[in-house]
Amino acid sequence: MTAKRRASRLYLITPLSIDLVRFPDTLDAALDAGDVAALQIRLKNVDDDAIRLAAEVIGPICAAHEVPWIMNDRPDLASECGADGVHVGQSDASYADARAIVGDDAIVGVTCHASRHLAMTAADAGADYVAFGAFFPSPTKQSEHHPEPELLQWWSETTIVQCCAIGGITADNCAPLVAAGADFLAVISAVWDHPDGAAAGVLAFNQAIAVAHG
Image (cartoon, rainbow, N blue to C red):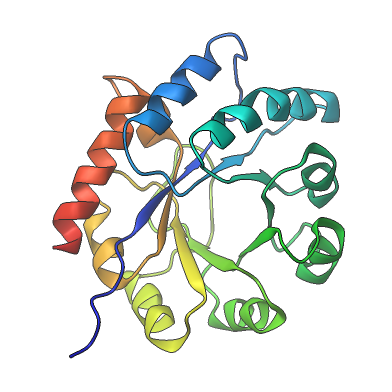
């Protein structure tokens, strides 16, 4: 018999702006509400000191919940702040440069849009995971790349390197991505903007994943 595929897991990405007075309690409650595979710090249009300060606040909360935290775009700050890893896009540092900066033990993920070639190149180089998307329209980031869930199925049948689905994912629309083999579901607004709070958003995703995984 073929072993049952592991279920998808939630990969949280921070809001684009963070109130460091209120966010720690929100994050703590969210991480306490259900399974979260990782948290990515993704702050745009702020200076490096703001990112450092956010890392000082967020890092210990993630560590207390045994949730790896990952820096977006900046392997230099990931290394400096003691992050568990870094996520780089195609216009950011190359995988090779990121790996050289953060070291062999850190997590390095690579955005691959809807490209099988980019994903295979990243995986062959040693990426820990590749990210595909946007699968749905996103209120956070516009994308010209819109893969179908079949890309996730092909990837999961081709390689053991993990894959992350991103882009407009909600508890209501994630089932096809789970069924197709996404290892991680990257989520921003569907958790942080959940009408009943971020903890309820995490719980809703965990329940939806369990149902979709069967």
